[in-house]
Amino acid sequence: MDNKTTWNETVVLIDSTYSDAVAFNLTVNFERMLNRRIPKADLAHWLDCVALDGGLREGDNNIDVVFLHPDEKKELDNFSPSDFENELNDKAFKDSLGEFNLYSFGNAKMTDFGEFFLETLQVIADAKEVKRLLVVGNTETSFEDIRNILKKVDGKECTLFGMQPLMPGNYRQEILGYSLMSALGISSEEIERAR
Image 1: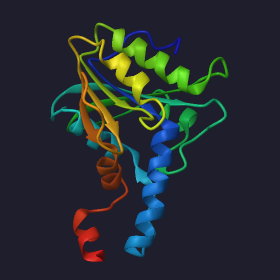
Image 2: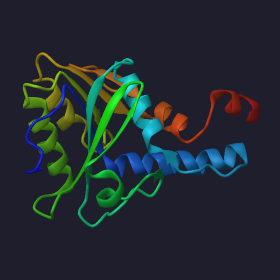
Image 3: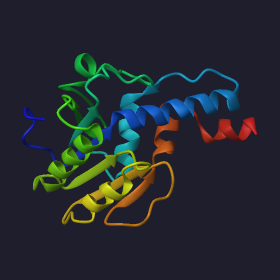
């Protein structure tokens, strides 16, 4: 993280391994239910959904998106685009919500990946310039640690994404599956028809 020292007002922090695993599980389950192939998740569409779920609205916003991944993992398996170094790091896209600046960081085998995620979350949570923090972390294994960091955050709008309702805290919570389903092209109407 040495080359990223200042942040925009809105930061999305993503545990890439966790979000990729959730996308995979949704894909497998919905392919069976809907009896069709599910394409890889549209990454830009997913980031739009996450930003909207986190309270961002249309405008000239600048959003930093930080993908954290284990060093040995070179790409997302269930998203497009997916290559951390060539397609995601130091790239950007602009749409009606603003400009999304993408960064990817591996843990460089210096520390356990879970610790790396929590340390990065702490750095971003402490950054005075950050006003809105959206966290896609592994709430199944690290919820208490994430919650402990977020409960000490003052003056920021924080949103924590998980696959099930979480214990309340100093943050809003959103269900991660909804944004991923949209990015995978799965609609509630299609699910209703399949029942």
